[in-house]
Length: 315
Image 1 (cartoon, one colour):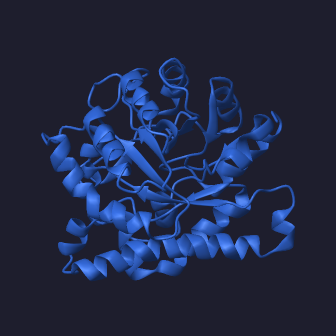
Image 2 (image 1 turned 180 degrees about the horizontal axis):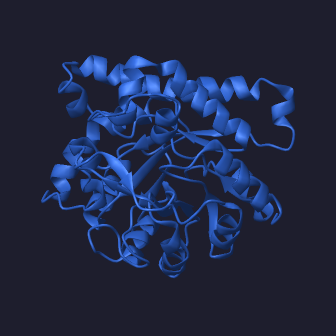
């Protein structure tokens, strides 16, 4: 039986604090992400900056840090002239950087007070992230489950063997890709994972399918240790959590974006955030059933600190 890495955090009504955005935080610190590789570009150019962002999220209170492998794929690196060995080394580097940050943080006795040793989640982004055209927010791939499994298989194998505590299968826009990732997990039977979908409304994932049906996939595998939503507008989160609660018995997670929308044509964020203080929203999401809570695009270590403080008042 697989060990749920969150049990140590969730006992006696606990909450797991996830980290916030990686790519947009790197960008905020001066990194140039105008590239099809997005945050994975920084694995090539400035890995120390990635390690520092991971560390800063831990200092802010994150119990889980997520690797810079969201857009790291063999196909994407091949477009940059890297062979499969080089690509695999960069994927392993993404895990190594997060582990280094976690180990450096945990080596300080003061950081261990009142904390459980943080986890490293290896990010498995959707097929649409490789396309770098915003299709992870549409899900209109036109691919079969078998084709999606072929795309994800080799990357998941590298990340599953890379030393992370679990896989973060995230920003999934459609049920078929969620099912494909779930089927692939069986090839790595000792590896836990979470499934997290991107949603366009309070009941629909990005391709228009029902989120409740996607959340129900989680109960098919004991390897799935949490299911929920990410990179979704905060205003939809409570309704989505409500529909998931009736569809699955798994722990629920949410790490929404700031509320802005990504314009892939012009490579910019548009709209207003809708959220400038995550203190009260984090408490509402907890009330709605989420026990793993953090942020996605455009959230910062300061936002994660606010969430931890808010949720510490609840437990």
